[in-house]
Image (cartoon, one colour):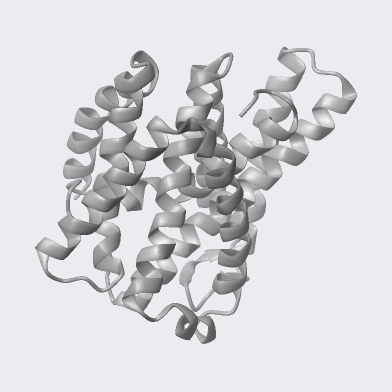
Length: 271
């Protein structure tokens, strides 16, 4: 399994880095769109669609909506606003699982939720790419999430006692969340000091980083919640040793739109 994971990572890493940082404009939108469309195909399974034709049809619908968003960039504020509302609702659904699962038991509801997860993630990345320092902004949100994952892993193993959401993901602990948050804040502080942010900018930066990291936790738990309800361990076997696309981007689906909205609110860019 470890050998599989390493080989897959060595193949995917240059593809991912090249797609994220070397492509621009329509090519970048298409690259991210392909990833999101694969995620949609996987999500259809979590929604209860077994037949391949139905899963492909849902992925095609998502691809069509991505094309519409590309052609109508003025819809971006609405898409990101919907994401903020959704992740607020998702936090409540995770906290109240399994009771809350009756609210989204139908396939139609789960497909709608998949749309609310996938479209804003694409929209957020495309928006970040268009802003000044676009590549650095994309790298920043990824580093925040990766830092949170690394910090959570080590602090959870060392100190984890209190379960974060035992009905959703028994392996995660509050101590892991605190460790991941701490490492991400240290990274943010280091960046702020290096770039000579003012005290006010540092405070806002740390607060924003904390929100993004907590959002990433909810993103991770949300996919785990749907997988648990569906009795599925991995979203697919597309990535040998790593599971599926959704298993790799679940945290980012929440972190990216929240990151974009926070920068927008800080007047970083104009939608």
